[in-house]
Length: 90
Image (tube, rainbow, N blue to C red):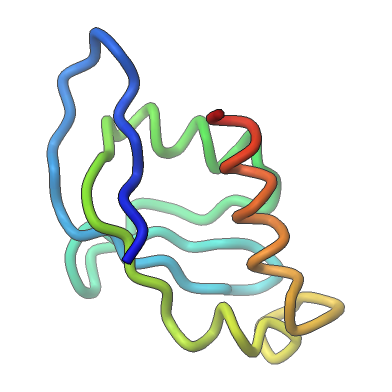
């Protein structure tokens, strides 16, 4: 299980965050079925996380392993995008 770091000096809501590949981007959910948005770049994902003050446990859906079925060029495309987000967030 992955834990998303919260940024210093920001109030956060700690919930389970579900991550899915969708249409060549990554879609985030707070709790099951509660979509907060989709982003196609690490910068846009970071903005989505910050805008919604997210922290908590992160669970990856199977679409992250089969990303080519969800608009990515390769199956590892969604995880590469997530890795870019992790680098950006430090």
